[in-house]
Amino acid sequence: MSLLRNLFLVLAAVSLPGCVSFTPSNEGGSFVLTENYLWPESGLGGAAPRMAGLTPGEYIAVGHNGDGIYYRGPYGGVLMLEDPLGEHYLKTGERPIDVSQRTVTNGLNGEGGVFIPYDPADTPYLFYYQDFRRLTGDKEARMPARPASQINTFKEAPPVGDVLPFRPAAVTVNGIIVSPANPQGLYVNVIDPLNPQGLPTPAGIVGAAVAPHVGRAIALPALRGMQGNLEPISRVKNERLIKILREVMREKRYVKSSANPGETSVAKK
Image 1: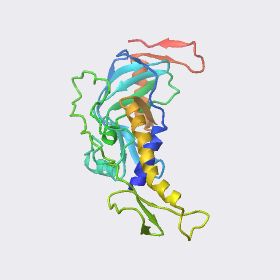
Image 2: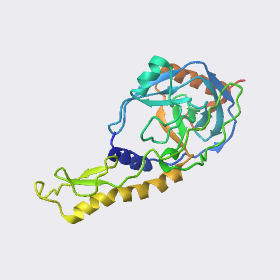
Image 3: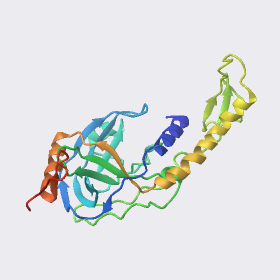
């Protein structure tokens, strides 16, 4: 994956919503999954296909809003692996918990869980706590403390550090480098659209070299601002898991009808 594409993905992540609104609370109790519940996801923006799902462990209520309850799972409970990591996980059961094996990340680091709607007609979805420390180089996780559990085992937080090191672009014109060579950096081939076979203007060459600096200056503060926020990521597509989660809501809380918003049925304990 080229650094140019990495920068594009980082900038794309900045355009995503930064957080969701909910009231922190353990109201809703917890539930336990004893096996993996997985499903395939299509890659976005040319990314590789991904495998999504939840892994075994205790999922504990950490907040709620008018639509449902957020349950945070064990560290690594949210699975979202691009191929070939997904295929490797299926074959071996081994999963990279942190993001050290990915050149660029949209914030996933295994911290998250599942949102279960009150309305059984609505589909549960996965969520995660955004973590861009490996892109920004920051050390503060700024995530809520993990809820206590007698079941979940926790590992150390993923190492921080800049996985997307910034290096000046090496600009090329018709394959000829016109700025200092930088084998590990970003190569930008400049073409004048009005004269593709000729030399681009000096302003065009300078602009191509400056653009990565500007993109990074815009991206990093935005990523730091989203650090630790809760973000929805994918609708649950495993029918067995959907059935389990709806049963959890029926037993733990109550069922609310979207067709009749004033109608609330309290579940019997």
